[in-house]
Length: 255
Image 1 (tube, rainbow, N blue to C red):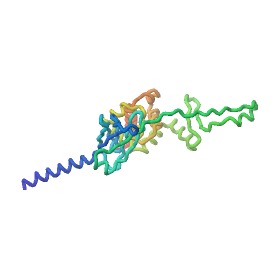
Image 2 (cartoon, one colour; image 1 turned 90 degrees about the vertical axis):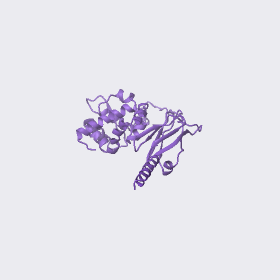
Image 3 (cartoon, one colour; image 1 turned 90 degrees about the horizontal axis):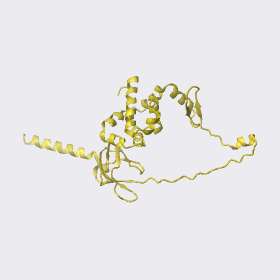
Image 4 (cartoon, rainbow, N blue to C red; image 1 turned 180 degrees about the vertical axis):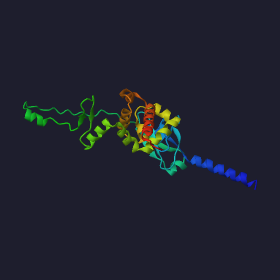
């Protein structure tokens, strides 16, 4: 009996180690144009909120499960998302190709307006901007609402007069994504990745909200325009997290 117990324990730890290895995706990132490996590519598991970077050989290794989404980003290259499969967990050497962004000047077409000098005729020939802009007497700024959204006016007015309602609409409807904030703050790799970014792309993917909503959250949390424009993604993360914590206290939100 004494010989059997150590044997069982050995098998248990062997199985445990194997299962932990099976939860790692290992692969190589390369440039699709040159077929050269790429180092320092940022890799983030959007589901488990963990991150890493590829080494000088283009290799990366990250914790993942089947159907997790891995987000790859690198300056000057198109960011991509890859769904984790069983094969990626079973076999090493998954190759992930990234494509360089193509920069091109868009053609600008200038259409001159032929004015006749008669107001009734010229007024009909000048195009009208259908985007709605609303302002309230006493407030220094206006608000763009657009014509495509019939409820835009009420949304704008609600955000102006009751910013708490705006935060509730943002945070309250996405509790799962907002709960990621705490995990993101505790992961050193994620923090290091975000500290070098200023494009908000990784944040929007992690939190599943648009960049315009990130800016609106910060404005409603009384952060300045200069901060919103110049802060790196890590500073933005900390700012949103602090605002969310205040929101939870004020609204007695339980997690």
